[in-house]
Length: 152
Image (tube, rainbow, N blue to C red; front, side, top):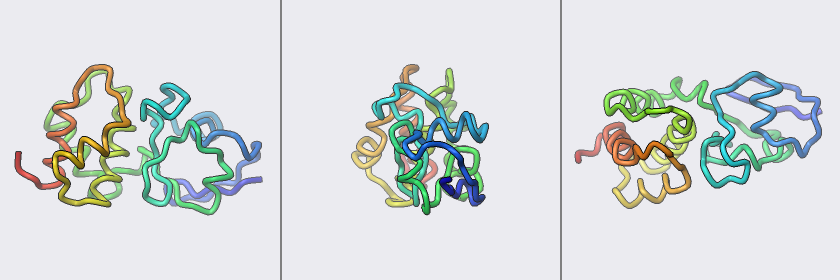
């Protein structure tokens, strides 16, 4: 039995300890906001926060998440930074297909918590592990700057 704290709630999980966190969230707990993309930590669609750090849940076993605070896209709007990013995403019309957006917002939220006023280079670096097949990178960048209160 592995105990996980997800979005402030405790969950006792009866799965093998090497089960990826992604499958625990989606299949065991029905939290489908976190997406499966590549399964190899290359695309960023599965990004969640583990004690505030953006991690790839597709390659993180639940044993590594035990005793830590996990935040998913379902709860990111409860945080003022996450809420500001969600609004900026809408203001800039970022989502097209929407598949990567949860991971993008999770990475951006972690960035703004660590670096509230990031430079363009810091934004590019922080977001470099998140792929958007629709190519909305310019809008993603603008939305992050808006949420950070940084002018263009």
